[in-house]
Length: 372
Image (tube, rainbow, N blue to C red):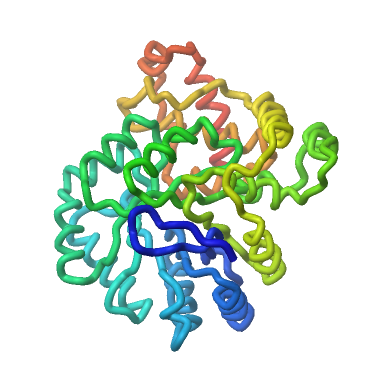
């Protein structure tokens, strides 16, 4: 296992971190075996993930607590997410934190993540004075280090980092398809330059990049003389960025743990050749040509008078079409409580769109495909 500095903290984190949310909860023995194998082979960071399903999340936290009982607890740091979009007050934040502490049978949360920060949820953080609540939770010993997960533009990232000097880390969705997207390579570089550890998540875009790519894209991969699995290509691209401290990989079976732990021994920054980077660029371009809605998520169309997040809906719809995975996009459409059918067709979004996208038309199509 290779290690990298965790931002400005005196902590070296394994380049591979275990994302626990996909552990096979129906097979407790296998889940515990997976956790123990990862730790025994050098993994020292576990992320419980985002609590989309509260019941399963509680079972997961109890399982992780059981797996870490005894000596294993001293070998790893555990990250817990506070889901900002689901919180309504400091009281709710406090209750959620207390619940995580009880479930994990601990006195302190190692790494606490303010989850899914964007311009809407960041407004909630500021309006509810959550940063002051965090400071108090750190002072009373319930939180050790605080960070945030982020999905929005570069300027907002700068504002969030500048707003609070206590950030220790930040978490981004980062695959080769996200190199210029929310906030992309420029964002992770800015965060690292400001002393924050950068945690990359979803290096396979939820499995979309490694499951049965379209035939023309599979041929691009096959054209390269060096043969690697798609998992290896995706992970090594992320690890190629020296700003990335660790990559959280969701694992659902032991063979994935074995493969990913082995690949972590190959993690080196700035190791890709020009030819390898050109190959990745060709694959990315081929995927982007499948994109139906030419939305860059600039969010000039926001806010919507009735609260529709058209850029995010188009992002989910584009992903569904590009990767042939409507099931995942439907899940997030429902979990994030979108309702494109609420559109009143006032046209304000279309007037504001610099690309003159027929937003109303695409909202209707996205609603039909994603709300089913």
